Structure formats: C-alpha cells, structure tokens
Image (cartoon, rainbow, N blue to C red; front, side, top):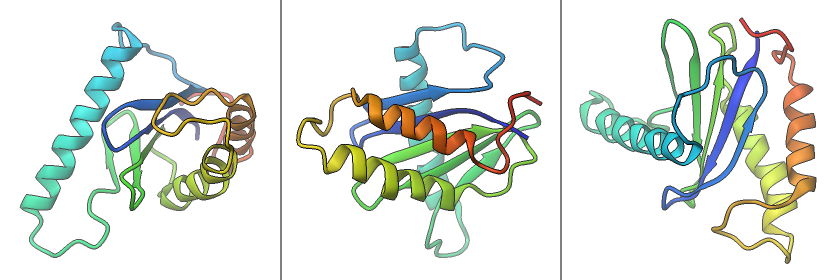
Length: 145
C-alpha cells in the first residue's frame, strides 16, 4: 500500500499546498493546470453526489476509486479541501485527513502569525511535519503499487 500525493485547496480553489511521495506517472501538464483540473473535478463530483443521492448525506462525498487508485476527500467547515490519492488497498483516510487539518494545518499555519491565510503555504516546518506524518502512516510504503 502507498500514498501517491496530497492536495490542499482553499474554498476559492487556490491550491495552497501540494506534496508528492510515490507518484509514478505525471499528468503531462503544468502543475497549475493539474490543480485547476483537480479542483474542477471535485466541484463537479460534489455537486453530482449532492443532487443524485437518494438519502440525506451527512458527510457527502468522501472518496472515489478507479481501477488504479483511490481518492480520499475531506472538507472542513470553512471550505478547505484536503485530497489524498492512494493505492486501492488503503482504507478510508477521512480521519487521517482530519488529523492533517486539525493537528498540522491549524498548528503550523493558522496559529503562525507569519503565514498569510489564503496564499500558498511557505512554511518549511509544516511541509516537513506533513512529510513525517504521512511517512509514519501504517499504509505508507516506499514502493508504489
């Protein structure tokens, strides 16, 4: 099992942070275009799920899976979106994504007076702690599936 990459978007669709671990295939487009495509896809999927669900969904969209990878999604009450792509064997990462937000983002970005909210994250401490956190996950592996 492995983690491929992680995106953090604000409520306006700005990619605040991107990390990559075991990503074998690149998108073939610029990172800015990739971020726009990812955010647009998430916006569309969330809208589709909310309109088509036969039940009142408390959490809404939380994940989807293809034949090659699984996308895990977490949205905070303020509209921040955290997305992690993993291989298929990884169970739900909702709690992991919530931990990234509550323990890492809030601690190293929100409470840091030097960090400007709404702009791409420049904190090396956040980046290194996030990397350590993800590498310590029980399903993280250095070999990609």
